[in-house]
Length: 127
Image 1 (cartoon, helix red, strand yellow):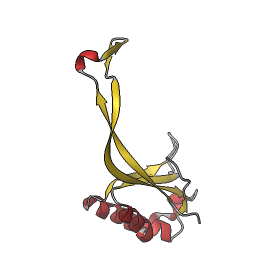
Image 2 (cartoon, helix red, strand yellow):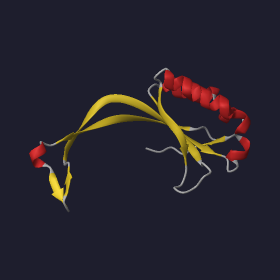
Image 3 (cartoon, helix red, strand yellow):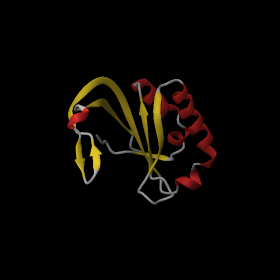
Image 4 (spheres, helix red, strand yellow):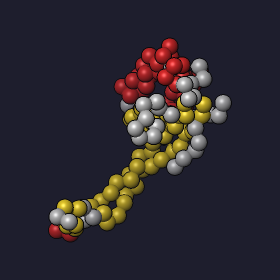
């Protein structure tokens, strides 16, 4: 099994120009962005890839997986998470989570029943 991918990211804030400088295109007012500002808020993306028969295999482990995610969300260490896959499909091909701390992301992987029981097959590194 390949280890799940963990990527460090920074949050960028877009600073809009003055309201008088908004562009109008086809009757729709659009906000023009002048620059970006690094807020120095570091987050960690965790990407999982799932086995093809995830729906059949996850059932006995799903409650523990969701409880672990909810615990970290309640503690403010996980900002968001959920299944991923191509649009229009009902079977997830993986999941994506956003953590505020590297330790929390590593803890999630170490304690996640999906990892322990082979539901997670890994994930390619992405930016």
